[in-house]
Amino acid sequence: MGAVMLQGTGSDVGKSVLVAGLCRAFSNRGLAVRPFKPQNMSNNAAVTPEGGEIGRAQALQAIAARVPPHADMNPVLLKPQSDRTAQVIVNGAPAATLGAGDYQRRKAEWLDQVLAAYRRLRAQCDIVVVEGAGSPAEINLRAGDIANMGFARAAGVPVVLVGDIDRGGVIASIVGTRAVIEPEDAAMIRAFLINKFRGDPHLFDDGFAEIERRAGWDGLGVVPWLPAAARLPAEDAVVLDRARAAGEGPLIAVPMLSRIANFDDFDALAHEPGVRLAMIPPGTPLPGDAALVIVPGTKATIADLAFFRAQGWDVDLAAHVRRGGRVLGICGGYQMLGRSIADPDGIEGPRETVEGLGFLPIATVLAPAKTVRPITGEHVEGGAPFSGYEIHCGVTRADPDASPLLRFADGARDGVDAGQIAGCYVHGLFDDPTSRGHWLARIGVASDGTVRADVIDAALDEIAETLEQVLDIDRLMAIAKEAE
Image (cartoon, rainbow, N blue to C red):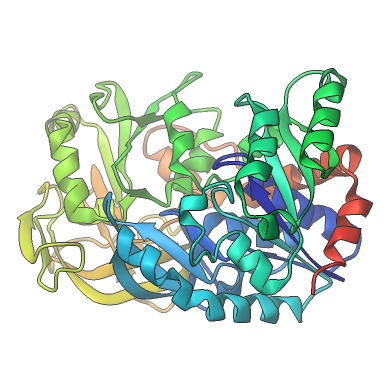
């Protein structure tokens, strides 16, 4: 059939959720569908069955399409390590670490690989739903672009422009995009849609018509605010700023590191009725009444260890431990809880060895080789099964008499369980209800037993049903047929 690309008038306009919803809607119609994002930027990565890294949103979109995630769905992934550098993942594997200026100069080098990945997906299915990044209105980034119009024109994929009415100014954002982009780019846009509308959509009928008149594009419809989106894993850490503890039960606190990674580890905990989950922002002390503090993953362990100390969280954590509170470190957080972290090859920055927080009898050496794989096994204590994934650089050695936390299916051991304090490399420990129940039992709470995958699947079906009702899906499919 073809392909269609959703581009936005800005970041965070809801493209990822819309692409996921459309993938499910097309799948529900009996079509073979694949998601695709040429270039993504996120530290919330997912691991594919073959051991590649892609953005979390593309993994979610693969679930929506009812297919396994694959590196072809996100051939270029940028993982920020600092304000000015990022690791570049190409076809699922690390390719370079570049400064922002270097990447802007070199990004066109990866266009051929982006197009090759897209064509492989196109050959597998009836329709590819493509997600842009940022906005085509960022014309200062147009040269060498592979994420928006650069890809659309090279691949011959028609575009639908998404405007976010919730943030205001949607008429100006859509019409303004038409005004600032090149005529050749504007010619790729076949239609627009409005996203995140609250209230009666007919109140926007005049505005909708005015956009059609001024921009010269057809409107496909107005998408309401989608409550089901809150039940989906988020890719952008901006959502963490809105996460606050509510309800009753023991408090689980997660400090928001500056390069926090794979923070969807905690989604299942956020929906457990027997606990309160709080993401603790910088400048805020770790709460004194927390039952469990989880030190999360990070893309820059040594830098975030310094950041952790700069917030005074090291002092807060020591006080938490003295009060008898429990601690869990995941991936980079696990490394930080040890005695030392060495970076002899300058993987994250300067070649140095730094002192860890000293809560676990481990030492970590960062190394160029990266471990990226799905993993299954069981908790050594109690035997609760888990399934998750590893995604980290470095090797961690524990003292010979340290008790391991996890036993992998192949017999290997991971992590340290010191009772009150524990840590491991595995992400996704809380998604499985049995594994989540094992951890909640440590703070005296019974899990509700919800299967996270079922929650996500139901939310995708709800979103797809709404999109079928409010969008001209038949027109969208006709646009997709125009793809070269």
